[in-house]
Image (cartoon, rainbow, N blue to C red; front, side, top):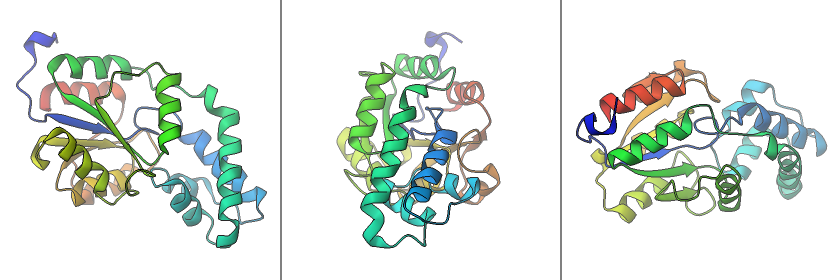
Length: 224
């Protein structure tokens, strides 16, 4: 479908989660969480438990994934996670099809934003490494505002761009993303190819659950 045939916009601002939604990083994040917990002597979480915390702010995520690690070790735990992640960050990339999707949305006139549990430094590094500077109109990170599912990230983006809740769509791969949208009174779409099993999405009433970037692209062209 060419840009000139796009339907009128239902949503002025589309906010994307980063890891597991645009960026193919779920498996490596799980391994880095497990390695960090092992390094500080905690009980290593299973893959499912480690994947569950993706999308939260870093320290909230690590504390949830490693409940037997005492708070006085949280700084070391965070440092060990960053150490392991840095070893792999050059192995990560956007999911196939993400750039054409974003380009089509921009051509239709949508504002695009990122709402992520990453740190500001981590997001800036990722945007630079995948040559995405200038694609997004705005972004919020967990260390700037509040971690998901608190709605502050989306509330600040709505205020920045003067967009009402009914004109914002949140897209993410975790229940934290979709619950954040509920808390901000915004619509959402869930993607099943990231960190969380999609069976948990339906209670949060996303407009759709899609199973690939191609399916997401098609849904947004017809419904956003």
